[in-house]
Structure formats: structure tokens, C-alpha cells
Picture 1 (cartoon, rainbow over the protein chains, first blue to last red):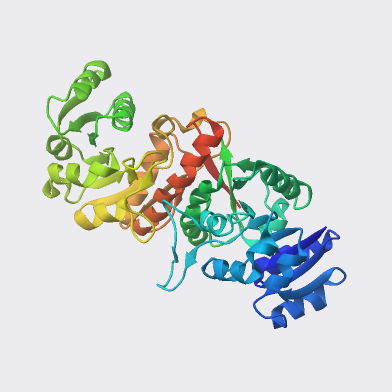
Picture 2: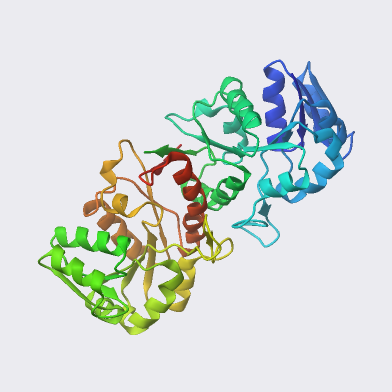
Length: 215
Length: 215
């Protein structure tokens, strides 16, 4: 399958590497087609890996991952273009973290709104599914490296798209438990959880953790 | 030991009932000394149970629980009086839920601030420890009714007060795992988690759940 991955940072390159290792074709998108980090990734990832602009990557992918920093996500997606995203599943991993006021970061949109909703509103013809934003990049693609059960959350307005993403996360990324929280407004919950995640990161002194819902 | 419990709703009466069952003396505080719900609680709880105003309850307790609705917490604590809270541990269970704009509720303070911090700032001589606000009333005092490990979070500025609360939660309420998230600013994390809790409540169709941190 063909994937477009927007963002050549840690999250984007980790997702892209996993997809290539599974035999998929992946175009890693950046602001500039000749982005050096993306070029280094293409050189190391091997067969199936390519790079381009955000627009190139979005046009290439049958499914598109938003792995850009939250603060730049809307600009990156505008650069990708609404027409390239039309009718496609857009898996939104970004978090609305604002580091401009120091540490710990705050959220630049939260409470009664979310980044996931903002993206869905701005690109109404994309099928936005919020997922994977509650764990670090390594765990996203290797959930089995934690001992014990733990859960991933998804939300989105399109039931079919969401079901396809859940199947993908289980079959390709190895997630055993994925909890459907409802429509895209539930991104308020999973994005705000980052404020607890940051405190747990401080307390545990590792980013390699996740939560398991017990009931 | 003597406890003051502020708030005669579900959370306050559940906490107060548990404390009385453990052999403690508890004064349940309400806006009016003759509050009917509090009177019904006193009649049913038996030996050790009494009621009074917020001020009566705060003066009575060696430790004080804030079980008022978040939107009324500052008023209730002002009514209790800074002098009655001076030097005492104030276990803050309240969440800053705003139901005025419909369901699901939003938070009236969040992100770069929290209700826990607001209470600590307003009553600087109280030793505020935020705890128990991430689970429903029943689980607060009976964590063992969930099968499997799950965790409680505490935060606060006074290390000695926090250690005493952690010991209390384990020995008296039966919590096996309590994670110290740091100073009172971590209340931003545990209060914002409510936005995820609300979505989980919708997805699971039960409020009887909690999270276990896996690492």
C-alpha cells in the first residue's frame, strides 16, 4: 500500500521506517523536497522509501499520516492541499503543544476544542482519525516492548475510516487493544491527556510508558 | 482522628462514611448547619458522625477533605476560613467541571493553571494535596473492587503532607499504588485527565474504571 507521511522528525521517520519494513511504499513529506533529514531517511530506509514536499507525500499516499509538530500542522496540511487529502484517511498523530512559554509546555488549543477537530473542520473532505498521539514514537510502532496490557485510543467522525485504522493498528503495528472514544471531539480528551503524560514522564523518568484502562 | 469533610454530595458522603467506618470522627460541612442531606447522613452513619457549617467542619478536622463541586470550592473554602485551614492538610478532590455550556462539561480552569493551584494560592497556609479526583466516589474508598492493578495520583507542594496522605490512602482506603507527580502544578495533569475520563465513561458505559500506568 502507498502511504504519505507528513513530517520528517522523530515521529514521522519512525512511522515511515515501520511502514517500509512492512513492505509498504512511503513518501516522507517535508516543507522542502530536498529536506536533509528526509534524504538521510530515504538513504537508510531502503526499498520503498522516497521523499518530497508535503504536497508530493499527500498526493502519493492512499492513507496519510500527520506527523508534523502540532503548531505547524495546519500550515503543513494547507501546503499538502485539500484536494490531495480529499476522501483519504488522515491519521492525525500531532499534539497541540506550545513550548513558547517554557517547560512544561501548554496546549495551544484545548478544553472546548482540539487540534484534531481543527484539522477536520479545516479539511472537511478528509477522514481524520486521531490516534497514536498518547504514546512516544517508539511505542507507536512497537507496543509489545512494554510488558503487560496497555491501550491505544482512536476517535473520528467516519466509522468506516476508523474501523480501517483500528484494523491497521492491530495487524500492522501490533496493538492488542484499541479503544474507540467516539467522534473527533474526543480528541479533546486524548490531547488533554498530554498534560498528565508530561507529569508522568517527569515522575517515571522515562517516556516509555502507557496506560491500561481497568474496569 | 478527626476529619472535616466539606461538601455533602455523593463524594463527601462517601468519603465521610468510609472515615466513620474506620473509627474516625467526622464532621460533614455544608453551607447551612442544618443541611438536610448532611442530617440524613448523620442519622445513618452512626457513632462519630456529625454535621455543621463549612467553618465548623474545617475547624473540627485535623485533616480536611474538599469534596465540594469545583465551581463552588473557593467560596466554600472562604466560608470555612483561612484560619481554620492554617497548617492543616487539605485533600482536594474537586474537579473544575463547568456544566453551564451543556454536555460534555468543559474545565473552567485548565492548561496553564488548575483548581488545585488556585486553592493553594488562595490559602497559602494550607497544605493542599490533590488526590482522588481521577476516579468515581465508590472507587476512591474501595479501589479493590476493580480487578487488576490500577493507580492513584497525588501532587502537592509540602512533601511531608504528601507522604502522610499517601500513607493514609494506602493504609485506610486500600490503595496499592499511589504515584507522586510532584508539586501542585501537576494538578493541571490530573484535572485535565477528566476530559479523557469523560470520553472513556462514554465508551465503556460505566464510571467504574481507572487507569494503570505500564512501563
